[in-house]
Amino acid sequence: MGALRNPRHERFALELAEMKKPVDAYRIAGFTVSPGSGAANARKLARNPAVKKRVQELVARAIEYSDVTRIKTVVQIDRVARANLVDFFDVVFDDKKQPKLRLKDLSKLPRAMTDAVKSLKIKDDGAIELELHDKNQANFTLLKYLGGIPDDKPAQQVNIFASMSLDDQLALAGALERSVTGAAPKQLDLIAEEVGSASPNG
Image (cartoon, rainbow, N blue to C red; front, side, top):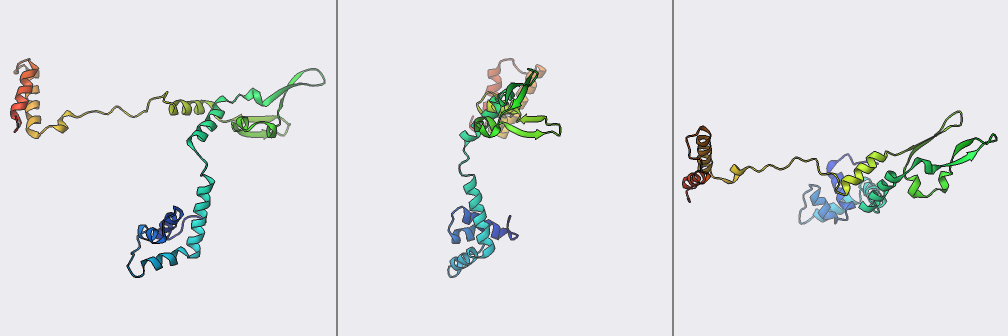
């Protein structure tokens, strides 16, 4: 069915699917809830066939994904990371005693193995092409999840001027400028003293 055309009706349906009371969902969706008729209007909209169908759709979707947990997702990724292509084949010998690879019956293999299968193609000549999901990406994902790879966010820089008053900022900037040109004493405590004297509380 998809989203309702009326944005407020869609929001109302979303809130009902979250088990909100009709009158609360009605208010959140942007409708005016008057003391006399607000609750009645909310119940009426909740009985609207399109809204009811949309709520049922949303609830069914929520139930479908209700058992998806973080640990299950990690286990799925780990299965891909540990998969080995040779485990899907047996070595058999033809009439001439030559070794050949034969694909195992995938329906009889455990889910822990077949979860790693991306695609299976049988070519016109009978050759079998088995492709597994990307092991490198799975290992990278696991490593990052387990903290083995640092976040790629840049280190946060601290602006010391942000916590200073304007007078303190001007005094420090002037003192630093004079120290660079050699006009100020070399002792840093004198610079700090000048900054303190510029402060109204100093």
